[in-house]
Image 1: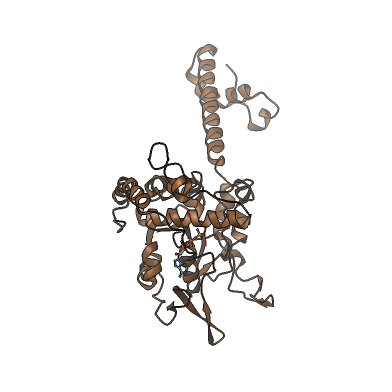
Image 2 (image 1 turned 60 degrees about the vertical axis):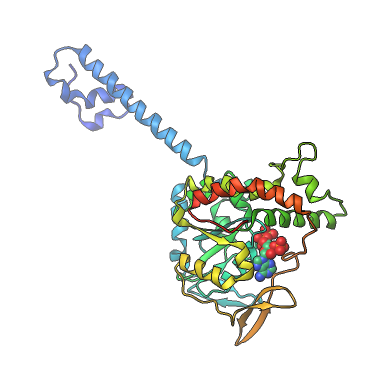
Length: 366
Ligand SMILES: Nc1ncnc2c1ncn2[C@@H]1O[C@H](COP(=O)(O)OS(=O)(=O)O)[C@@H](OP(=O)(O)O)[C@H]1O
């Protein structure tokens, strides 16, 4: 039996020998060396198992992190506002330098995740006028784009506008709804983030989507097939489920993925059709959900007869500036024959019912 050694004399010894020393007190009543060696083997195996599990946990948790950023950095970035709020220089919109010690950048607390062509720009632009909201003007495509995601959360935060601590920071990227990797990545950034999802009649949205694709192709001098040819299989007469504008409108497929990670109470569904006709009603619902003061009135949002859509009178320097969405919003849709719409409506019926069941709310999509 080994005698107890002072700790300093352990330096330079092998691990098993060190453990042997450490276990020495247990040996006082043990008669044989073979028994103490057995205990030593058990302890070493247990330690190896603990180390192995620890390593696996670290590897699995880092696999969905943005490149070059650790959990502690995510926490640090969440706190960033409080650390930088008194020390930044900012540029105002006209490029003039000014100090705004109370402003800083922060990760978004609210994200408009879609759906494409369902009024996401109108929603963002309206909310950006609210004094308690600051929205990133551009779509960021952070979580859904590997190149951007690889730039890390600090890059993402830098895309956000400056805001004060009592303002909500917001971004919109309609593609997030359908991106399979995005929900887990958003959840990892902030599991309490608030999500806004604008949904529009699935057939109208699909036609709007097609109209956008048509316009893009047209600008490149490319021709396109008719909507009917793309959305309905001419051989079988059935809806082409994987035609992207149809697939995007199959909302329950995408919403289900988000609901695997986020509770329903964290997602607010905006009626995109009503956002066009009655924006004030829809915005009141959004204000309630976000917990901000009611702000929008018919003085700020009014129907512009020339444009055929609602526009805003934005207060600027004591006066008002008219602000309507760009020409890419509210495009005239190409004519689609009634039988095509009927076929699509029949197709979407069962999918809509699945969505309504999933979210506990119905939309008037007859
Ligand atoms: N106020 C106002 N002005 C103009 N357009 C409005 C407005 N409110 C909602 N909409 C509807 O928004 C549709 C475009 O949706 P998105 O902004 O989500 O499109 S995008 O995915 O960002 O390209 C767009 O669809 P289309 O009409 O099919 O072009 C509009 O109908």
